[in-house]
Image 1 (tube, rainbow, N blue to C red):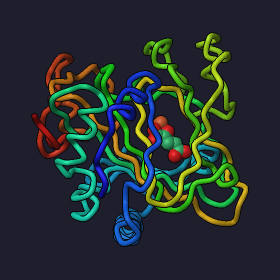
Image 2 (image 1 turned 30 degrees about the horizontal axis):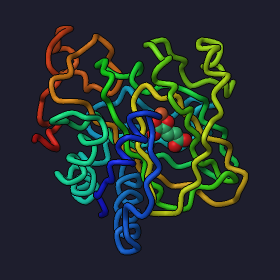
Image 3 (image 1 turned 180 degrees about the vertical axis):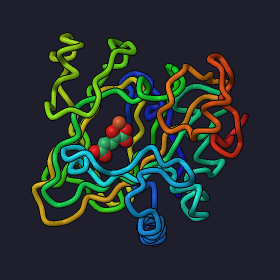
Length: 265
Ligand SMILES: O=C(O)CCC(=O)C(=O)O
Ligand SMILES: [Fe+2]
């Protein structure tokens, strides 16, 4: 796993709100991690989130054809955990966000099946159970991601415009732009990646992905992280029932069983 960052890469990320990073994993690691991801998915059935948390299941006719989404694979798979919670990766994420320490929010496998629908433009952080300007996601390509099979696109500097207004999963690719008309002036950066490349994006960066016009699966593993000290905002999102019920708005999200610390300076 390559975790070296140049000053130019850090500046680019901080200015634009995303970074495309080549050869994050080597050939052996790609095979190893992809196998672990597929194994974890196979054990989850129709549950979209691992563990006792059954409120997220497949069942939406449109959204199920955006991607096969399986969350918190790290909870049931040591290998996925070891990749996504490596302190060296945590340090890299902290450097990009200019923060001292961070925790896992959740991981997710995102498989755009053959002929899948696009992922509509959206922001991530407003979905989540904390608000932060310094949340960050790594998205790792485990197969080549191309303009033909649904690679990502990012709107550079959109985090400067974004507030907490957001759209949910939508059949209209650009519905986010109705909320933020100024973003219509931004030229998206389309982000093809080879297997093993990854991207990083801030939780307030607008992004989406195109349809899969191929007969192959676009397989990716993403993980979102939150700065240490982030507090509960009242939104349930992926929180397990008992944990959610135990929280009061303003509480720190720091339960190791759910949001483990990855790195602290
Ligand atoms: O993989 C996709 O299609 C969307 C990914 C995404 O929205 C994310 O990782 O935050
Ligand atoms: Fe997203």
